[in-house]
Length: 309
Image (tube, rainbow, N blue to C red; front, side):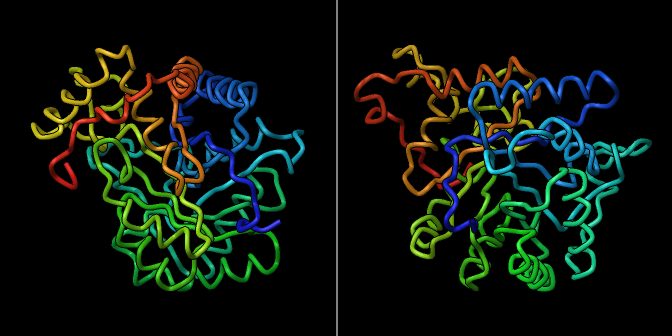
């Protein structure tokens, strides 16, 4: 079965947050994955970048023994970091200081092979070109290699995982994609990727939405620790979130429920990835996704005046 003919689950588990160190981190990761399976999730997305391979190892161990045809498994290539290391390396204050990008043919082959081994599988439903933004001119060899692996069968489809719209647009126009993973650019606060969706649909390219809570500000609203795209929200974002909260509150609708269901109601979006750090967060997100919304709720949605925050 190719990525084009795959039935995409509506919700998936993104495993970026399942990299806490030590035995407790390992137990937590397994508990989240097992709870996701228990609640019906059959789509799992990971990357060599997450913990430098640690998240892939934990996911592979948790899924081991389950029938491979019963779930969708996707990973990424193009950027990684040292094993078991977080985004800010020890002894440094610079975010992503140790990350290394490599879209070469050999680097891509090695990356995919290591992912297959860590995930304990003989094929991947998709491999995303990871964080290719700013590296568009370098990703040609990786695309060629993934195309060869697709013919071989160890990779069923080629995708791009991006926090922007430029790289997905370029690769879509080149006809290289089976899917695209858009993080944070189709949400209640930022719909900048929506212009790609109709063209993707026409080309048979599946759209996977991630980061739909914009790193947390759409989960619980404006709090002292709220972040938008992993940074403190600007005054414009704060104002817009407050408008969204004022819209939800009279209806008794959680902001997270509106944020999740806004994305899933778009017919062009095949799947939405959730990225919980714990079982309680996963349950909260799944309950929000299932919360009934009152009739006419969407007609009252406040206008967002700028295209992006």
